[in-house]
Amino acid sequence: MLKAISELVVKLPWSMIILFCLTLGLAPFFPIPHVWEKLKMFSSGPLVRPIDWFDLIIHAAPWILLLIKIVLTMKENGVTDNS
Image 1 (spheres, rainbow, N blue to C red):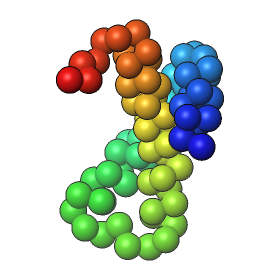
Image 2 (cartoon, rainbow, N blue to C red):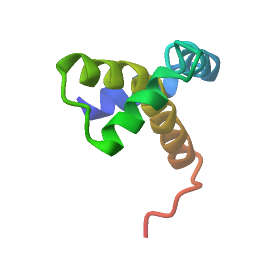
Image 3 (cartoon, one colour):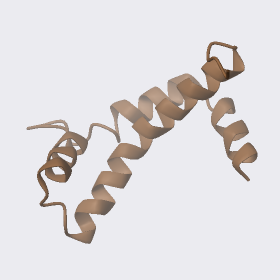
Image 4 (cartoon, helix red, strand yellow):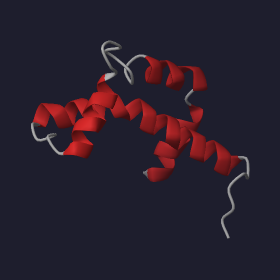
């Protein structure tokens, strides 16, 4: 299962992931990006309502996907050291 997900992430084009990060990952853009607002709430403690957790997950997902893609690409290209 994890291998199938990894293969799917590797096949996703960089442009699509970056577009997701710049749209869903940062929306709404003003006054501050929603993901940043939720991360500040998470770090200070008042992230208690289910809708706040849902918002955090939805707006952070593109960034997490980008990080996974970076790690998998580095691993695939032999950049990371496994020793």
